[in-house]
Image (tube, rainbow, N blue to C red):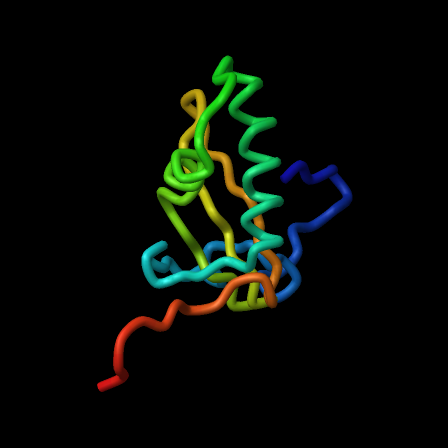
Length: 107
């Protein structure tokens, strides 16, 4: 964030991606909608092509971009993050396009 001399930094309440509003999740506990998977695949292909990776499977792309997963308390969205070319890259998934995965009987 760049702050000009006459500006002040907004409070965390108006900064939806501030660290205190992000909560880590395990990717194994998350289910993405088919639309989110498609968009994730498209974005991942574009980002990977910038660093010279020509073709890869959706499974590999998901593994790269889901090394760290965060739930955003402010808007219910999800951030899928991974390291690419030495930099952390995060792809947002809006609320409604992901849910907590349910498998097996509840105890």
